[in-house]
Every structure is written in structure tokens, then in C-alpha cells.
Length: 241
Image (cartoon, rainbow, N blue to C red; front, side):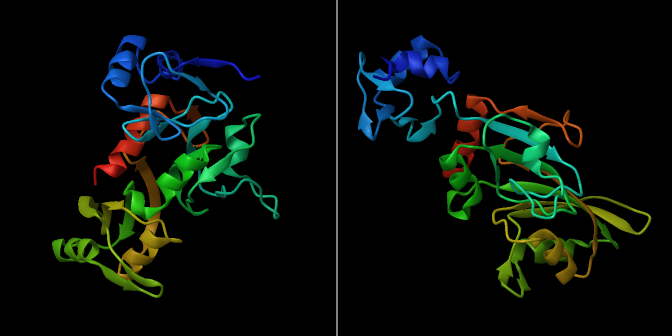
């Protein structure tokens, strides 16, 4: 029989909050197990039951891992590749069976999550949950304020209209521009196609943030584990939109 532990211990062990704070959250009715509001003294099976705090999932299964990886160019965002190209899963090097959370095309670089948390994957990848991704694009030509407004207002692509949540020019130099775009959707090569549609070819594309998660210390090919507090902050960033 699986071990059942007190809910406040589970929240503390998951790294979400102290036991004292967990007791207060339970008393306030903010904690649920399998959709049922918990009371002090309740216990949970960490491997089979679903724990939520403020209706956000809390990972208490020790088998669940989420990594933040800086994907270099030339690496594919898949778990395996029939052509033998390096994958994001190869770079993380975990002993668990992990999968990329969403995609980042082979010619682009930057942050991507790699995880075996199915609920996290669904919330991050489906636009209905409102979790944004931030990109910085080096593009040919000088991007004007009118073009920025067009990117935020929406441009027509072959698979339908696309728009940035926000767009701004960071810098312009030597006939090129550095543009930051915050995106909600994650269609194939969407940023590249949007910039091409407004007359600016992308020379380099870097994803710099997933929701509030970012890390300027990671070098291409490096990764780190994502903590439970970061995961909750990420999920909360979506539902607040």
C-alpha cells in the first residue's frame, strides 16, 4: 500500500511553502485533493492523487521532473529524431523519459522546457491558458513604429491571422533591428513568418522567457531543474490573463 502523508507535509516537501503556511492555506480552503477541499489532518497518496493550491496543480510525485534548457541552433525540439540529429532531450540527459514542452524550430535558440509533467505541458502549450513566450529577433532593415503597431495588431499568414501580445524595437544598428515580441500562440515558425510578412527577414531568433521563467546565466546547451515555486508562478501567470 502506498504511503499516505499529511497534506501540509506534502506541500512542504514539494517546496511550495512551509508547513505553517500550508496549514493556513488548508484552513483558508485553498487546498484540494482530487477536486475536494481539504481540511487539516487529511492525508494524500503522492503517486495517485491530484493536489492543487488555488486550483493550480502542485507536483508531489517524485518521478516528475521539469528542466529549463537553453536550446542551441541545430538541435530539434523532439524526444527522438529518425535522422539522428541532436534533440533537446539528449541535452538534458535525465534518466527519466522526458518530452519537450512545445517547440522551438531548429534554426532558433533559447529557452524551452523539457518535462514529464503532462498537465504542465498542456497548460504551457495551449494558448487558451494564456502563458506567453518572449522572443528577441535580429532582423534585416529598420523596423518602424508603424510596423510594430502592425505586429501587435495582426498580420495575415497562410494559416490565418497572427499577432503579438506586444512588440517593441530594442535597438537599431547597421541597417538591422533588434525586436522583442511577446507571443501567445506557438505556431510553426510563427515569429519568422510574421516578420517576413512585414518585410523583415529574421537573421537570429532567441526565446528569452516562458511566462515569467527566464535565466540569463544559462549558456547554449545548458539546463537546470525548475523548482515547484517557479512552476506555480508560471501557471499563475497564465490564469491571470
